[in-house]
Image (cartoon, rainbow, N blue to C red; front, side):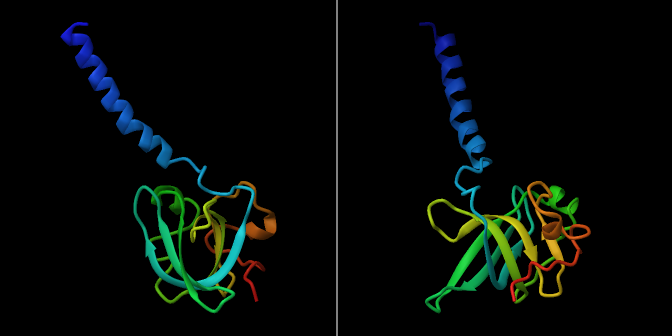
Length: 148
């Protein structure tokens, strides 16, 4: 085999080794798409950056212990078009978060919607949600979904 072919194979292998993890990162196979969990908690951090925005919040579990959850959305450009913003949440805000949980049981998930106590509703996609979940318009609608 010539040095040229060895070089081409090495470069190809290098590109594949880099591109496969990037492709895997954007998959949703780690989430249970057939399950939606809604929980009420308090925001600890709202990270507005690429490639995904992250909402971190604390929830009291059935045993009375605080569980720290991290839930992701799409990138900021997509979120802006749905009414989300850099200042949508601040530490201490009370939220009801509906998400697809991680299959491995860790406190991590993919957000479907977030509802504030005043009924303001933030959705990550209107696809697959009922009109009641969506409200009149994303990013500011009233909703009856906030758990009492």
